[in-house]
Amino acid sequence: MMPDTSGIPLNKVTFPRFSSEVEHVIVILCRECRHSIAKGMSMTVADATSGTGAPAVSERQARRAVTSSFVGTAIEWYDFFIYGTAAALIIGPQFFPSASAFAGTLAAFATFAVGFIARPIGGVVMGHFGDKIGRKSMLVLSLVLMGVATVGIGLLPNYEAIGVLAPILLVALRFLQGIGVGGEWGGAVLVATENAPPGKRGLYGAAPQMGVPAGVLAANLVFLLVTQLLPEEAFQSWGWRLPFLFSAVLVFVAMWIRLGVHESEEFTQVQRNEQVAKMPIVEVLTKNYRSVLLAAGTFIATNGIAYVFMVYVLNYGTEELGFDRSTMLTMLIVACPVWMAGMAFSAFKSDTWGRRRVYIIASVALLVTSAAFFPMIDTASIAVMQTAMIVLAFVLGCCAGPQSALFAELFPAHIRYSGASLGYQIGAILGGGLAPFMATFLYGTFGTTYAITGYFVLIALVSLGSILMLHETNTDARRADAGRAS
Image 1 (tube, rainbow, N blue to C red):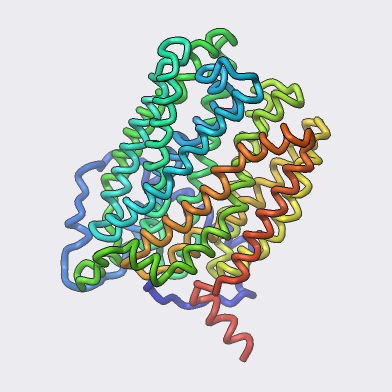
Image 2: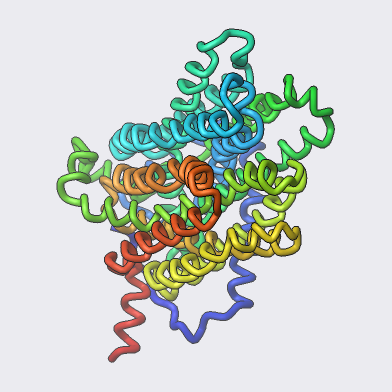
């Protein structure tokens, strides 16, 4: 079980305290990133597992864990998202040149979805071993798989060079990417939340969540830089490969930092007490299937709408509204820091208000803002479009903020990696995996973005219903509510 902590009365929570807490986490990230690169591989798991008791997590270990979770997740999602950006801008002509523009885009987004199909496999396999031998080993493995696959895509010859073998190998590498990222989220979340100080699991759990928009930001910045520096012909020929190849440098940095992370004391205690599950995934599916399904349901809208926002809108803005790539990429880049701010804010509030309450408020806001998103985009006014992206980004961040702590607290420690990963990855398939394809198909079939808006409303209602059926997992918030009621 997660360690018990004392509650904080709601009337004591202020925005200045939120600002100082978030500033504290940002300072931690910068300081520990520098420290980890300097110390690197000299840190060992033995340091974290010595002794016979279950000592409290040190402040140093908590800082190191939250930094590793943020940096590693940001780089893994950079790898995953550059494919999405490339799918919207270049994959179709490079690997499906004989298709029409519409069919080529559909094919590109279909290969994008392959990564999501593979994600539950990565979540199940790495969750199984993460619950048996530790979180750290699987996080290192996921980073290696993602790096190899991403660099492989950057080196892959196109259809013109090797024919039909090109899209086949592309699908295989995208599948490998999916396996890698499938094992990443659960492990990174547990490293952050299981090492968090008392009363800050929500805030520290936001670190790997904030790695997602950080990865989007990095991917789009690199693509923007490449498109600005290279002429169109060079970008089409070889320039689009550079963001994929740059991954090799980023993965090396993340590996150096991640190798310095200790195993969490909570999991170490499970090992000491010989409570390690023999078949974690079996126990999850037989005893905790309801939590898995509801966790997946809560994530469908956040993930699905986010991927339309991050991926499909790039294609829609360039192909249908006539904007150039740089304009669309810049608008998305501007929205990413706001997305991260929403995550930090809602995660902080979830430590006092409760995960469920914050998630419900954010889900209602998502229902409203997602319904207004495409009508605002269709104005083709840069100011209105940017406003739509910023508002939706903040609300998406508010949905994602408490998610790490919520999913981790739904499952006991000995099956937590498997349970949290499976719920998250099933939601990812049903949400983000299908969303760009569905948006392209719906717009191509009906000729209006109102069809996409209807899809947004449908999945937002599914997620709202799912979170309403979950119980509050933050014992601090439950205790505070009970005190106010009495």
